[in-house]
Image (cartoon, rainbow, N blue to C red; front, side):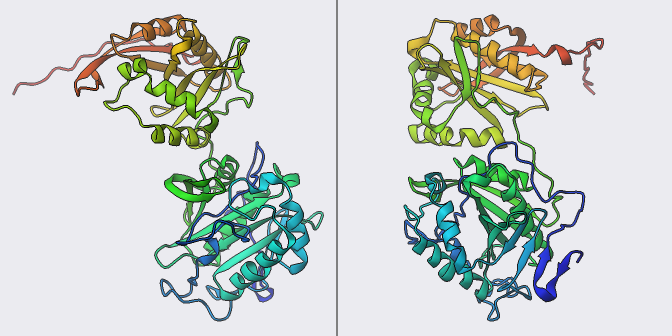
Length: 463
């Protein structure tokens, strides 16, 4: 293996393909805290482990598949772990030393580092010592884990942590976790470390799958996973342990045959401060907007014209709001909040769905009862269209309403959308019947078709 020196137990993670950089390209801040979230029953609420409760409990050595037994020599697939060091372009991933306790404590002094996992708060030097001596070192000596200090090669300083856990008795997946201190966030170090560990797991650890899990609200961790070549695979409801209680987990996976290229975001990036015309602002919907989303989706007028036959429950809507920022990264939709500039009030919500052909989006919208009749929907449509046809690079925007929803049709027309036909019996009613769908669309001038349209017909043979 090029770049490896297994005799000294040092491994340079050059990867299978030299043209794929180890450092993921991060255009936003790296994670505040990027925890592991696999748990044992009865796991304590606070954990001195640097990767979250329960993550230290996976004990099977890869060398003894599904045996449930630890390697007795501190080995993983024949590689001794006690002194194993991995190196990448800018980092050294080495074993933790007791002398690192002070650095860990200093990094954990920032309250933001404790946002997503139930660590002791405050995190003391005694906690750091216990992590090093009772978790990190035993993990290596048992052959079940590789906990690493992330050392910046240029300065020699500890900038974060990363770890790899062996698969459990009922899974083929090794789990990766990481965090980076506040001062080094935005550097791409977390992605670089995750790539290094995944490369080692596939090429030396004998595993076929690696995965990363993070609470759905931990968007920075999700960005790192995508940048490290991990695909979003789904949600595990209520799986994550956070300081605020159970939360949904986002799962990202990578298998040995994946190229490992960074995974692009599913939807274009909305400006951090939103988009505005001075009267109304559109911004990403967040968990804090849950009350407004509940009011929007459950008020009588919205229920009257909804496309489903049941009113969404408050817990379901709360889950939707919690996942909103993640969904802008992984799809298939992006939720937006309409904010009245003068008052700061939330006046409505929108949704952009990217589930059809490339660069085609379907829109949905609703205004809260107290703010209807002020032209906010058409204003929001014009605002979103300007962004979508500019930085968003969409080719076509579409929306649909039921025939009786005249207010929605007027808003579409006032927002610049043109009539695009009727689809028979397409939208479900609450009583189980179906309504036609009145369609509206707007085409980006840059992509407007210039070809000659031809009408076609299909004749059926009657035999």
